[in-house]
Amino acid sequence: MARYNWIGFYLVDPADPGTLVVGRYAGSFAPTSAFPLDTGLCGAAATSGKTVVVNDVSKDPRYLSGRSW
Image (cartoon, rainbow, N blue to C red; front, side):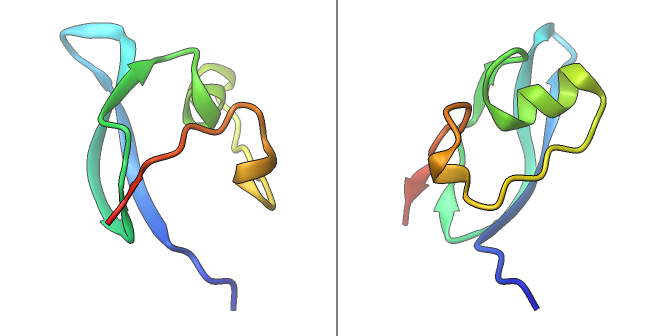
């Protein structure tokens, strides 16, 4: 089974539809709390409407890193 170190949900901010905000999450780091909809891997998924699968996010130029605990 694959190992995941973070799972969470980003939601479109109702006050600013151009921004994703973090919802519930669990894992080994604190995520970026908000960012523009057209930024990052989550933004790529949100704007394309498709699942984005990446084997190593640290090697993807769209990756936004979080803060380690």
